[in-house]
Length: 208
Ligand code: NI
Image (cartoon, rainbow, N blue to C red; front, side, top):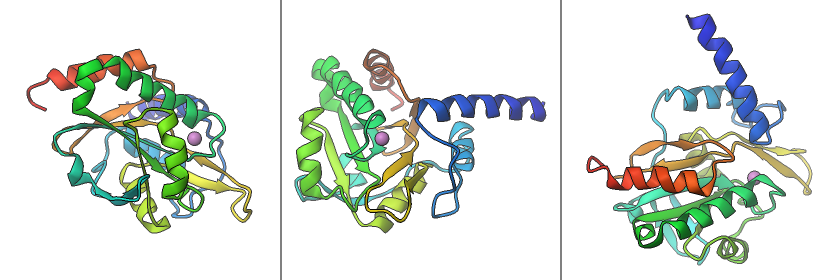
């Protein structure tokens, strides 16, 4: 049973890694491997999510508590991402639009994995192109590391010692309920229509 499950996981993780644009490169600087983080996330092992205090793209300090009462869509990425981030952010924007009036109860957040280049001013040029309600968040390398690890996000600079780098990163869209509790994640490539359906289910669930 365990062996079967392991094999299934290996296959599923391989597909998801490919879908998220991951390579099998290296471990992150924190020593948490992509496989370990994804394993924890997929089997819901250990707490997922947590508090943060980050600067938004208008320069204002925001904490997780500021968003209580809203269903959160949280996406981790970076503005120089050539492909995956823009595609997913575009779908998030379309989902928020498609929700119509119900979107008032939803807050999309973009947390950068590249605080070195993604300053608040830089994010101010980036996030509004996807949706006027999308909030970009940045902070110190340590603050970003902490919240990324809390969400089991894998990310690593490549090449690590160049100023001209890309960031390998996992690309899940996290759903957090109105009390700040993690609900689950959308896999990479989830369409706006599917997000709308699932968000609608969660908005109408009285337990949330
Ligand atoms: Ni990306």
